[in-house]
Length: 94
Image (cartoon, rainbow, N blue to C red):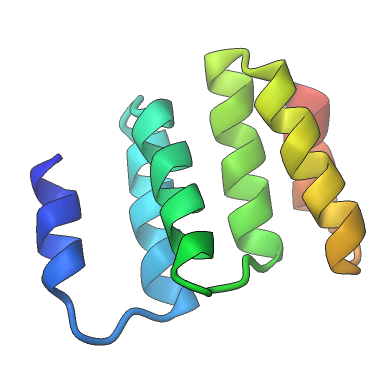
């Protein structure tokens, strides 16, 4: 988790940097770390966007984490964000 330490030391973190880190974890087979970072992002008050949700659902698909995927699905519905094709594909893969 050295990258998370480096990421924590960044002064300015926007949604793009969060998405890049979460996506990097998913792409490198570290879905659990990706979901932890997804939670941390929300704890720090950063609202997920449609990219973040698609990435998080992909992590759930890779981990076969259906219960977490259901929670994220509920968050999407509550957020009012319109479902994109990428989000729908990630949900179907899950």
